[in-house]
Image (cartoon, rainbow, N blue to C red; front, side, top):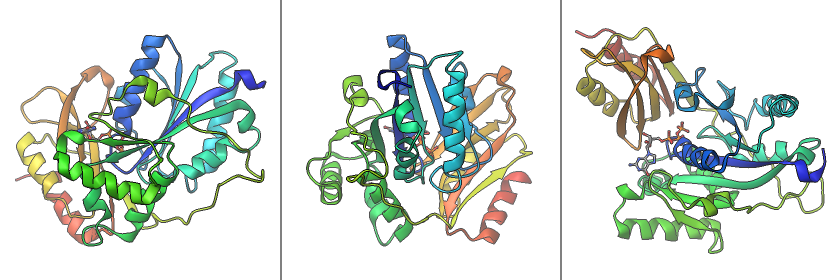
Length: 322
Ligand SMILES: Nc1nc2c(ncn2[C@@H]2O[C@H](COP(=O)(O)OP(=O)(O)OP(=O)(O)O)[C@@H](O)[C@H]2O)c(=O)[nH]1
């Protein structure tokens, strides 16, 4: 493939629940306005993508139940091959890759910069999304693990653009403090932009900020990372009864502290509709989804350092309501 036909690629990285999908949906909206056909590669830790209803009319490739940056790098390469083949029938103008919340984007970058992908794809930007409302907590030695701190630092350091998301949840003084702390890690030059529900001027989001250097060339900066999320677990709950919304919110808030993220679909008692829910930054959100989407209630929980007995007991409360 000639250089001028390379597919521009945006990699969206960031910790669990920081707002990656929200940013991706905003970028897709922009593509629609521009009449561009996007391709999407989604990598999820759970064995099911509970958010597929968000991308119904889009070309989505899913890499499930593992993290691109570990065992799934080969799968990512296969998906890229598939995408190139499919493009002969249905061309794409732009590709978005959303990693799991625990992916190190260096590994995605590495796949894209290796042969033959470097001749087919052009990395435009690695956008790392940060939850500015929980940044201090995630970086604190008292309330977070060394694994989480290191992973977030890697996600920040290899970003070409940092989005400080969820600014609505942070008082201005705290936001300043967060920015100063981040600058100490990434340096003053790295571009940092505030965002609220991932809304950022399209020009900033779509700007080309990445210079590709093939792996193996002298100045390549790729280094291998250690697999730091060995203790991470994704848990799936199915066969769920209809649940009262308030009781469910309370249940979420009382989850063991190792649970960092929850998402899924539930049936709310006395409502004929299914709801998609998000639990991130210790906040729950519910959005009704159409009955025609053929979804079944399911809950995905993701966490680290979990006490399985405690978690099982907590889950039982939900599965066997009084
Ligand atoms: N208050 C607030 N909530 C936000 C903002 N951006 C995203 N959210 C909410 O945070 C939750 C998680 O957002 P997602 O975009 O799904 O986060 P993610 O990074 O894709 O999450 P993972 O799937 O864990 O990787 C959702 O409920 C969003 O609506 C924001 O700026 N402010």
